[in-house]
Every structure is written in structure tokens, then in C-alpha cells.
Amino acid sequence: MYKRILVTLDQSELAEQALPHAVAIAKHMDAVVELLSVVPVLDDELVQAVGSAFDWEAQKQVAADYLNGIQARVEAEGVRCTVAVRQGDVADEIIRYCGEVGRTLVVMSTHGRSGLGRWVYGSVADRVLRYGDVPVLLVRAEEEG
Image (cartoon, rainbow, N blue to C red):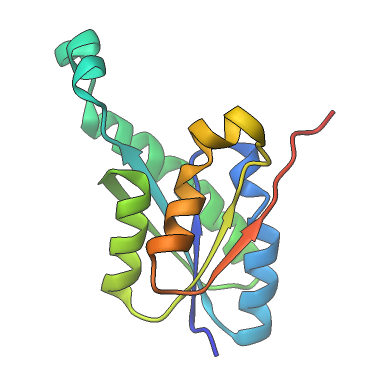
């Protein structure tokens, strides 16, 4: 049914809690796991605050290096895996990526936030679920302890 399983990662252990689910589904369906990280754009105030000291290319390289490490772990489990890094609004880029690659299942963590934290930080999963046109499996990740 699914030939591609997209896992969105933000370099956090919470986001990585979606990986075992994606790998299990990929094994069962002989699908490719696609790892995506989006380097978020900064709003105008933050751009002015960090000025020219912020190096977008360096941030993209850090994300790529991180994903390459995850890719090695996934492939060690016998699952084909690809890596992509984008820059922009996180939810918009996830939705755009899905539109470009075609039919896919998105597996992502909700980061386990509730209340105000969910309002401020949980909007990426909400937006992908509401505005994307692909199936989404949300994994509620929880912080240990």
C-alpha cells in the first residue's frame, strides 16, 4: 500500500520516537523510509537579532549530517532509506515535499506537549494533518522521567 514512509525529524530525541513505527511499517510493506529535516526560517526580529552571523548553509549541513547518522541506523535494520533537507516554514515544507514525491505515509511525533506548549510548539503536526493530503500517523512522544 505505501511505498514511501516519510519521517520528519528535528534533531530531537522526541521526534526520533516516531522512527521505530516507521521502520516496522516499512519492513512490513517493503517501503522506503524517507527522512526529512527542515531548517526553519527566522522571523524578521530574529534575523535582525542574529544578523549575518547566522549561517544557513552550516545549519543545513548540521541537519544533513544528523540525518545521515539516522539513515545508517535505519539501513542497518535492512530498510532502504533516503535523506532530504529543506529550508522554510516547517509544516509548509513537509506538505510541499509530500506533493513532490507523490503518495506517501507521514510518520511524525507530536512531541507530547499539551496546553500552552502544544499551542506554541505543536502546530507543525496539526498543520500537516489538517492541510496535507496524505495519510499521517502521529506518534505521541513523551520525555523520559
